[in-house]
Length: 102
Image 1 (spheres, rainbow, N blue to C red):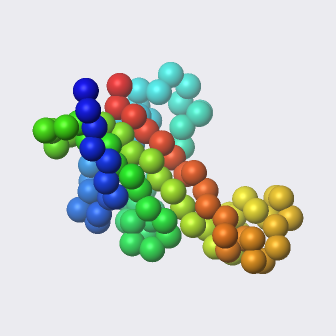
Image 2: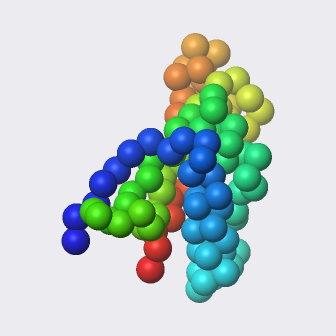
């Protein structure tokens, strides 16, 4: 099966949330998966990062997604744990979540 990858747009947030909810409900170890809310997803798409979507060729179903976050100098930037300089904090990128439909 071939897949197409593209950047998520605002109108993709409902499909992302549906797949994230499915993942949360079906994961074997519920404590291993922390889901996000739609507001967070929309902020990532709008300004705080990007989301890559995977869709099967010739289908519109969402097969998976990968969330990348640019935390900047926010308190949740993991660079603080690594004693990054202010310059390097602003260069940090987080792999936030990855979900693939089973």
